[in-house]
Image (cartoon, rainbow, N blue to C red; front, top):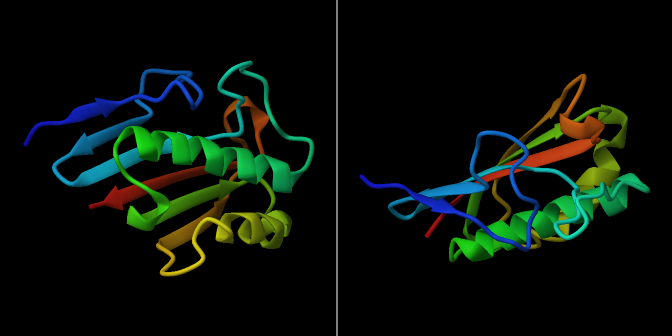
Length: 126
């Protein structure tokens, strides 16, 4: 099976040796997204709600570049630095999955790239 590298200029460019997403067959594997502004490269992290929405907007851009939408997402992984922020992150995240939400796990970690508070990856299937 072949793989296609997916890139969107509407999302931050990778900050390491990885692709924003890889499509193989009818499945898209989206790398973890953080709250970087795709134009300025600056972090959007005034508060955890704003940061989570920025992550979701970056995910949306990469999903669309691959021909997918949030409705196609079957699995998400959320990495957060403080489980005490889970409810606020969950509220913002939930706005993108109002019906038929994907499977998900949420993991508290000690550190994330660029010291962000939240990173989310996903798998989407057509």
